Image (cartoon, rainbow over all chains, first blue to last red):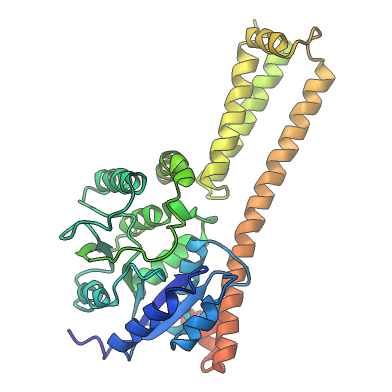
Length: 240
Length: 130
C-alpha cells in the first residue's frame, strides 16, 4: 500500500518523556520521511520539547499539564484544522514501534475501516505488564466487547489510527462532553466510535518493553478506582 | 406518617438526584461528579426516610440534642449552593481545557508562519457550510 501519496499526521502526546521522545521521533521520520510528525507537549517540565524539536518533530505545546486525553484531542483538532487524510497516534515512551504505523494505516487507506486499534494480544503476547494493568485491560476489553457485540482484545491500547471522517466525528462528540478521564479515554472513544457508526478494526502490533519510568495511566492507586470509573462510563452511555 | 423534617429531606434528596441525572443526561457533569452527588442525594434520602438512623448518628457523635429546623434548612441550602458551584467549576474546567487546546493549535500555526489561517481558525469550515 502506498502511504507516501497520503497526507498523514503522526501525533505523539508527551509529558516529561525527554529520555525517549527523541528516539521515537527520529525512528518514525527515518521510516516515513513524508509524514508530518507532531509531538503534543502536555506541559512537560523537562527537556521533552527541545529533544523532540532536535529530532525533527514539530511541537504543539499545551499551556499547562492538561492530561493525556486533552493532549490527544489537541492532536485531533490539529489534524482536522490542517486537513490530514489520516492520523496515527503513538506513545512517546518508545513502547510503540514505528514499524507498526504502516500496519495500522493499511486498513484505513484501503477503506476497510475508519479507525484502527493496535492490539498487543491478537498475535503477540502483550507487553509484559503488571497484573493490575493486565486486569484492567481484560476487564475493560470484555465489557466493551459484550456491549458492542464484537471481539476487542485490547481496548486500552494507545496505538491507534483514524481517517479524517473519524477525527471529525470524534471531535464533534467530545465537544458536547466534559473532560473525559484519562484512565477510561480509550474505552469511551471506542464506544463513541462504535455508537456513531464508525468502522473499527483491531490490528496486531508488537510493542517494546518500557525502558524508563512507569506508565502514568495505570498506576496502582488509579487502578483501584478503575472498575468504578468504568461502571460510571457505561452508565453515561446508557443514560446519555 | 413522615415528619416535617423527613419530608423536607426527601424532597431535597429528590431534587439533588433529579438534577444529577438531568445534568448527566445533558453531559454537563462528569461521571465521577455524578457519582459523588448521587451518593450524597441517596444518603440524605435514606436518613430522611428512616429517621431512626439519626439516632445512630447522635449516638455516634455523642450529641444529645436533635438537629433544629433552622440548622437543617441551612445545611440543605448550603449543600445546594455547593452543588451548583461544583457543577460550575466542572463546566469552567471543561471550557479552560478547550481553550488550552485551541490556544496551543493557534500558537503552533503562528510559529509555522500561518500558511493557511482560515483552516486553523475554522472559518473555512463555516464558509463551506454556508
